[in-house]
Image 1 (tube, one colour):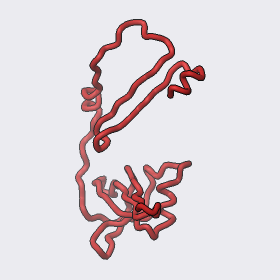
Image 2 (cartoon, rainbow, N blue to C red; image 1 turned 180 degrees about the vertical axis):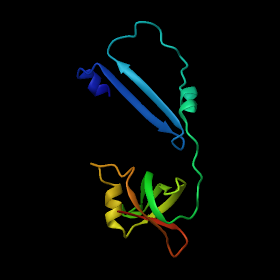
Image 3 (cartoon, rainbow, N blue to C red; image 1 turned 135 degrees about the horizontal axis):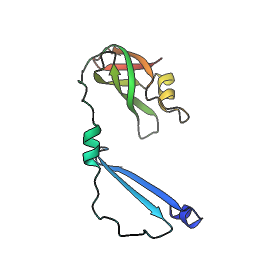
Image 4 (cartoon, rainbow, N blue to C red; image 1 turned 120 degrees about the vertical axis):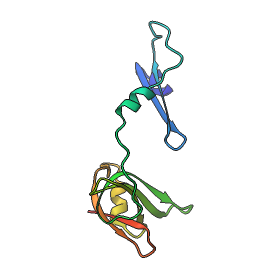
Length: 138
């Protein structure tokens, strides 16, 4: 951001997360000083609390259609995919967690596609032989 500001940008925004994505911090930068002193303590927690909806029920086992809410892909030290993890909404609007096996290259490709987010996409959930729910895109 320093380079952008030095190259002529008038405003810049820095954003970071901490904890387990539970802490959010933002900083607005400007080439010009503020017109008046800025408050030293600000919080948007009250606004966030007002806008928060009901927390869906969490289910440990699910099958059928599942819509992606969030995801991650875990990699080993050798750079190979170990597996993916998706947070899903079931057809009954419950929340569940499922694995994407390393062998499911098509689903992993959809999760890691930098041109299109997989959030909101539908797929099929099924229980694997080891009792862990798995999700497949499509």
